[in-house]
Image (tube, rainbow, N blue to C red; front, side, top):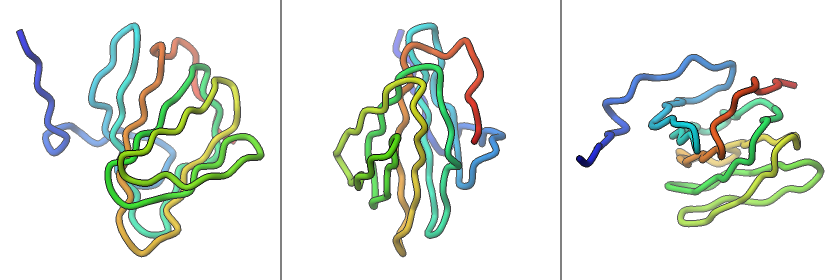
Length: 113
């Protein structure tokens, strides 16, 4: 059986972050989340108990991991190790869409800073 998930048909998640957050898939080995940040929107600084990968889908945004900063663009992947403060920001005039893949699925809560 093939399971197909459409972003547009997935409910918005309730989070403390700005933007549209949609959990696409969640099982013991990973969680996949689609996030869309409009100009000026951001994810608040936070620490996850698991590793996270950010994959750019559209536009570009700033990724802060610990004391380091980079730009994430379409078709680029950035790794964020567990238990390190990170944040994503859309400082552009265009939409910024990306996937977050957390592995394994978190059993502890994310710490919002």
